[in-house]
Image (cartoon, rainbow, N blue to C red; front, top):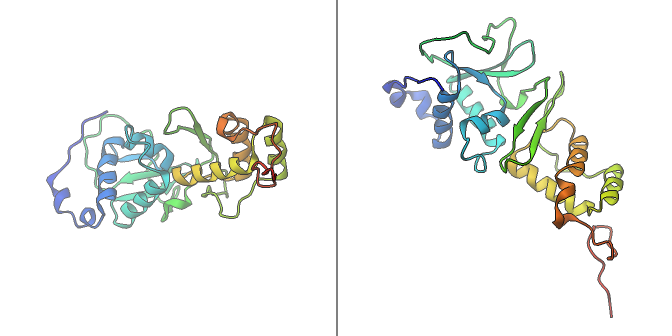
Length: 230
């Protein structure tokens, strides 16, 4: 990682002092991640792992998205999206010595789209980001015109999900509730939540022993064992 010059003016910066403590800490950590031009990917999932490599279990993508917005509103960074569809950021007035060409396209205005809200960010390619427990890989794939979003409050498993869960011996309703809580806790965003849950059923959700059905027990419509009345 290249060395960075942090000038004392940052202490008296009105924009920096307008940030709350967590957002300012994020901004300062961001300085250690960006290239010599102050540019880097603006994908929240990637920023969590790069800015907080030893604290990924304490920071969510939802928090990073909020901090990106705050830094953008104060004019400390610019969020933009170039022709390849990938969201990028650039720290303003970074003023570091440039050693090598930037790997990230510059914000040229005409060929780049200015983003005013980090929640608008989309990406055309699939990016794999290592999850907090280092065993689950979260995949975010969005295409032009589609925006990844948090799991809706009214999302429910489909009949196809129920059939798949039955086939692998998983109680569908507890599994869906576990998945929803897990996604909300991590701030996970997806374009198609039905497909995402299908992948989870076929992967890590299907392997959790606490969600396995007791084949010898009759379950009610909520996936819970029926009580025996004596």
